[in-house]
Image (cartoon, rainbow, N blue to C red; front, side, top):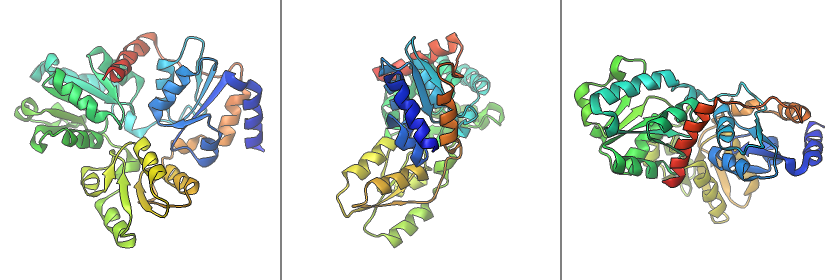
Length: 340
């Protein structure tokens, strides 16, 4: 009944509404989406939907903020579960990031360090990075962002996911001894000045609990059970997991890997369980198995009831808002990503 009413309201508003669903949404929400994708794909899809007045973003808070940053003037963004945040994004509050930047700039020089921020971050942190000449990146283009950063400056300061940062640094050939981790809970980030001066990659200490749930033993057990399988993981996984997997890449990479796999093949996927189970459902001529069950509870906060409540509120919904200066500076960082 709930799903039927959602569909009826979508039909009523037609092209005036676009419903965006992230890959990690529960199946009924993903199936209702006009577009299914990762956070930046969906934000761009919203801004390109010229006739859509209402952007309903089924994802977590930073994703809805990204849509608000890039939306057109005639559009508004609606987030059905305003309390659905992202613990990873919350690990890098902008005031602590500013303190860290000031310290590092004092040791290295602000013109020597390039700030880079993962899409999985607050709009305020994106804005800070934009002000200091840096760029946003996604898990699919983090390596290119690192290469760009090193061409422009001596070192990069990457927020907020330590593991994506470490895997990206290794991918572009940065030696392990030139990688340091800034711990905001410690004075000076817990990094000795000599190490900070010699570092090429400075990584904020943050992580996605969905992907740090995976450990090397999970891969070893999967290979024992399914010796013919390819094991693929997300680059937010710890380095020791990524190193022994058969492949690592963004959500889009994992989706394409399953779509392009030969019928009869077996793939073990290390990422959020809703995506893995949906890939298994949609590709029954091949075997798709989760490396381990790992759920994003914040994504799961968006239910058919919450979505229906948002659609019922049209044409006067509660909308996502950001200060003008935050939007302006964050958009600079997003635009730099496109130029990269």
